[in-house]
Length: 429
Ligand code: ATP
Ligand code: MG
View 1 (cartoon, protein in one colour):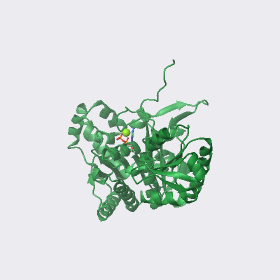
View 2: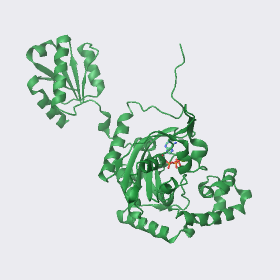
View 3: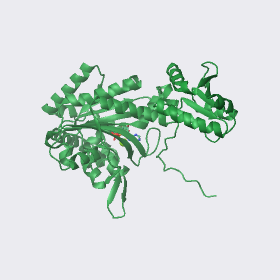
């Protein structure tokens, strides 16, 4: 016998038992975003490698060591997207849909790929729902993004388990001045820096701020603070955001060390964190990227967005036992038929019921079997009611209507009254 093949490490199947929760989650987010006027965009999963190098930045973890990059048969370098913002910006530019200041409020959902060390809450194929807004430069829209995620946590019942961290990175000019001061401070103490940070000192010094190495952390205590270098415009913007969050009653913590892993952020950055999932605590993260569109070859265009990790949020729902019970029941009614003539009548009845009761979740027994085995399958399906047709029922043009969850006795219902009776019973259930 040949060896069974397995899925790639860090890339998971989402099995049928799990899918209802995914659909519930995705549905909740989609209708929430509809309610705030966001429109869905669907981008390809594979893009030119150049796109991510140019947008995410050459010296980021993602581009340096996490991308799935390969040459296709024409010798072009392609990459499985590690995130969605770059593709979204490319699409918006390619189709000219944010030209002339036209506002776009967009969202997307789908798999992302990063070659990381797989562990709980961290995978090589994972899924994000992302939101991107173009051509709105004020703090009002930053606030809206946070307000809508806060509403989502409320709808999902996980509000008490997440906290919001905020920071402002300032404009790129302010950041450049700060970067010089930070480099000067750290370069004078470089013998105490870890190897990664030494390298970053030249390539991407701001990333040293979120180093996890204790010695580096200690060194940073007296380092220059980004907040002291914030330009006036960014300060006003940040104050505007905080005022709106205060007005909306959304609690937050200012984290001066929050810099985010991607190069393209400016002004606002934020993360929603939980302490319920161990090390992989960020469930949603984002920020403003006013320079990105121009950097990608477009006109100067304000941009702001976030992405949430679906696996981590699903894990959180499970951990907090916030999985609604009704989503796991996939079948309302199970139809059993004994004998060929009864099967034919059952098929016709089932299709008529589907016509009359749109949305009805009706499973028709397949693979024959005696009544006992069919009823066993009906019970196992999770259905609330079984419908039974045998020779007698066929002769009388009735159906055996059997409650499976202790809501009364089996009774015969005339075919002509079946849909009405079933609808009433389902409503009561
Ligand atoms: P982390 O700090 O956890 O590595 P990140 O800063 O790399 O996250 P982003 O690029 O901002 O993450 O992606 C947004 C969200 O996507 C994260 O907050 C997280 O919820 C989710 N996410 C990122 N990488 C992974 C992964 N490898 N597996 C599962 N979810 C992920
Ligand atoms: Mg990461």
